[in-house]
Length: 106
Image 1 (cartoon, rainbow, N blue to C red):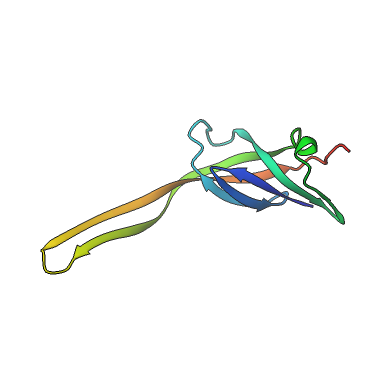
Image 2 (image 1 turned 180 degrees about the vertical axis):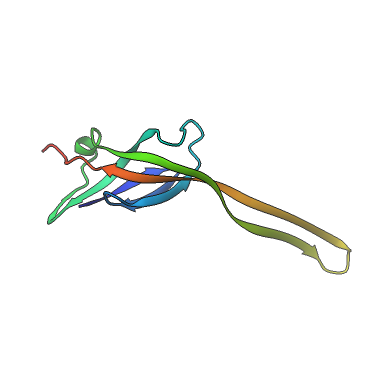
């Protein structure tokens, strides 16, 4: 059984026990439980994608860690003008562990 969930504008495929990196959830502390909205639910052969049915299905997950991702370098350069700009960025992530995926009531 697995589900496709939405978090931070992205979609993730999760199953029970998976640890997933999502964009930082600033309101959650380590050890808290968070709910993720479900877009698709696959249980064996049955696939549920009806938004009315999935409206009540929330995937439960526990916050494991807050951390930063790898650094990316942003370089801007224009030829023959002496224009150079260097900038770095490290995205903040939250690691969550999926604890429960409820079945859809039909």
